[in-house]
Image (tube, rainbow, N blue to C red; front, side):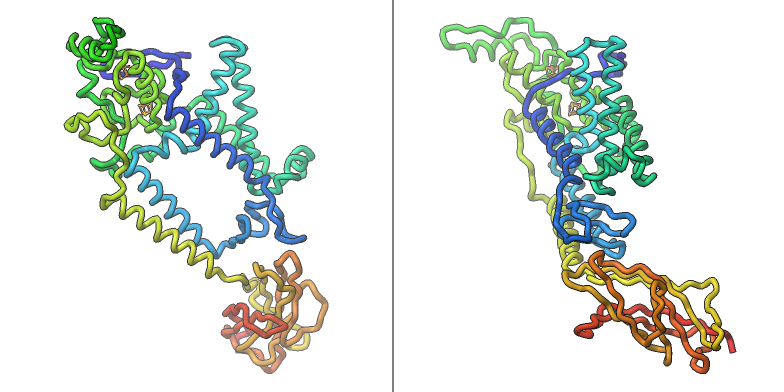
Length: 479
Ligand code: SF4
Ligand code: SF4
């Protein structure tokens, strides 16, 4: 399959598979991708002992229990501000990285980049095994792509299920239907996006390049072609690998400059390794994801033609005027980067505060309003509530539930046949959750008219310490 890429009024036709390259940025990309893929696939298999009746998966989104376990921490829906803090931290972290070094997120860590790179690796493997462009090669690469895509879907779904028993549950049909749907959707999207859409996602679908320009300034490092060195480009006329009496370097310098040309030999190697087909010599472009592969490619060429490396490099805008051979470092001390660093620290501080001050007992009491009340045969009135209680305390086996605001009110849990009492002692157990119906009965003669404010109190039965209160309403007939 061939792809046609327009480059500065010229058209270059190349295989859709970018050429392979070796070098510093290639090594960084491979290392980062290996770490991220290992983290993604291995994390659900890590164990964390939380006691006999709680899941021992270190990172688990427990959808049925509406909680998220991350090692020793347990998050509930009401901890949403902490998740918002994490999102803010992620956003400002991304802004910070972009301000310092351009689209490093896109080039090195974005899942689209990582999986596309993995799929390129499969392409190259198939080429080696069965040759390029044959039907056999196409079939083989699709089979491997789909296998990787299925594994990706499984890897993602394993965060929501017990990873160890999940494969058996999937095969025997015992897994929840959502797991099959998730794996199916992830398989399809991974196969299409990383196998076929590839760089088109970066060029046409992703919104990030559209506003990243606003984050760059004249101190941001971006992949830059050193025009002052490279132009006028063209094939070298004089042989530049000469060695005379140890004066080789001088001869090489002279030969290179004598023909009036710059260092760029117009070999197009930088374009042929680029995953998005960009010719960086035409300046910074939206298609450039900042992966640095063209730097490696050009450095290879510069070594071959005996010129200094760095014709393409991470540099600041305006490096043309500076004309230095030395590559500048990251400029951390400037207002924009300091501001983003401070905002990251602020978000981190907010998250740390949120985690250390989380409520350890969560209670939801939801009134059942259809009907709002039930008149009993002895004239008493009953209101029904849905009760959900969860805690994340170490040793805590029971809770006392009582009420205030309506004299004579008695309580009963729907799962018991006990008589109503002014307070009830409920067992929480090792699952650390209660999910039940709560009945509140007010005897005849003490029933409020219409809606009356009413408080339900949850306390430790041993120490009497109040753990949580819920303000709700009790409905009686209009009088
Ligand atoms: S790899 Fe270097 S020398 Fe070759 S075309 Fe690109 S910039 Fe010029
Ligand atoms: S131009 Fe260079 S840095 Fe930009 S995407 Fe292409 S290879 Fe990567």
